[in-house]
Image (cartoon, rainbow, N blue to C red):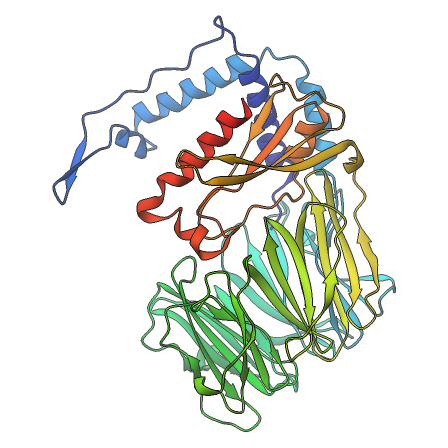
Length: 537
């Protein structure tokens, strides 16, 4: 769900004003209130762990409420006298009023996508009956709640584009209720999956039922729902023995032949198990892999599954698994591990699109099913890439691209001809032509070279005197790439420098980089961030 303008505006305005205030601090500026340090120490396995601010965990205690009031008063004392607050608010509101659009999905020549207009709080679900046809509203959530806290999302569409599953979410909760709509008549079916946390909802191509995974009190489970049946009696088909600490997903191929179930362990999915079943032949559920401490996952194309894995390959490799002969002895290494981390794979139009993060810049290489390189997809600048999904029997894929100062543009790419075109370019009151983005490398405290993106207005003199906003994150194998940010766009057009370091703990350089910023090595993340600030000064 998209938050309302008011909440987003307050957050962005606070960021802009506070950073401006910090840049303007002087010895006569108000001083922050004192925070009491209590003598609280826990001893764990003989190691004393001081926790002097534990008293702040009780948010309703009079002392805590007094501390919050004092902090709010201090904040207002600092930012209240600053000039230009109304100008900042007006400009941030302009930046917030930028439409958003989701990646389209082609089903039977019908294109399904979500879009939020510049003056809307929530995304609306749309249909185009053809690549360049008129937009038709399918589901508009705005009338569902007076305060616009009810949102909707696409869940699944049948291959012929005639039956839609969509989720309805109340507030910011994780749970959704899944509804089914006849796309031609816009009529809702009686079948509804009740409010739950779902991780895969798949309508069978013949519309006879739904395979889905959801979280239960005992842990995630996979079920089958026959159309017209009572969801309370849906048959559980997988999940016994797995507790709440794992994630289970399910998908069914577009031809209805295969169902694939994945089981992920840990927040960064350190281990993934895969199982499959031939639904047409009604074979038993069969493991592809469930005994290896590594990540596995990828698309199914025909009778082959192309697995992206870090098994004995920290930067990733691609394995070809013949689902008619899935024993490990028959697996074939299709694309070997390279010097840079392999970040994704999709199967489109008889081709494999393989994404690499090369020095934190995305490169997409095209291969044939035998692993032969066929070329690359070129991108316009340093930025953030998304999408590249599609179907094995259709040469069309869509991808999104944005930069720190330019919102998302969605491109349509034909893998057979190599031609690409703009499918949707979002109008925005910004210009990336006025912004320069470059990548630098700096040493951390242990000598490790850390990359960092630096953005600034063209022509600005980099003499160390410019207000600089440094932001970073290192954890959970999440790679930080310079995609569009209203905060960054505002900061840059007002003469600031925006810096985004790629801290250890992320996925920018594969599993080795990830492990270098976790558990006993977590201090590296903070050292990398501090070193970035020191290098910038």
